[in-house]
Image (tube, rainbow, N blue to C red; front, top):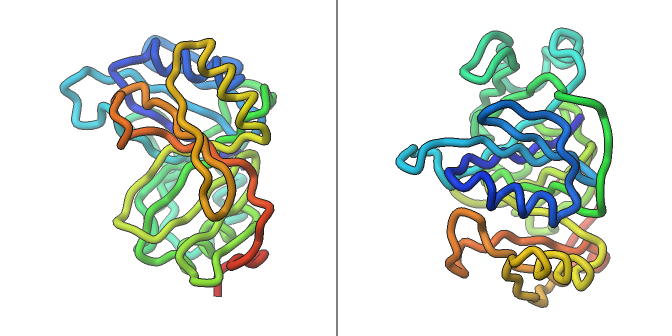
Length: 235
């Protein structure tokens, strides 16, 4: 399954500049919608008016080639899966008590990969172990989880992470060489700040909708130090 980060914005050109600097390739577009393929996963950019309550927010979706076949294979997953018309077209709506409501959409454009950046957004939830198990039931592959049980990530075409916190979504990416990425972002006029975290290095990237440092988007190096972490789902 493809993991797609969707960003709702009144600053389309600024987001497209970031998508290109991340190494993305445009795979689908219409008047209000642009989808970029990355090394793993996709970045969707949805135009909204500046006064829209969605402006500056993001969401996570999954993409699959055939919605009906997918629903038949996953009808017993631990969530309510409803197929039908939505405001953005035919999709499966995923509703559960452990994750924010999100969509499974039909795959747009060809299956290509571009650059070295991987989409790695976060679901925030108060129910991390249950949410991680649900995403595994929906077709993603468990990767790592914290021993404390407050974080887990799963892979598909892209990465989706689950983190303890108030229900919502957060934009995030992974890249194997943050120094190289920082140079590309600087060439595109995008501010970056390198940070050393306990789990590895992070590049804080200027948010296209909010230049304040508190809104920066995190780009992490793939995690190699597994102290305090384990492979697979959280216990």
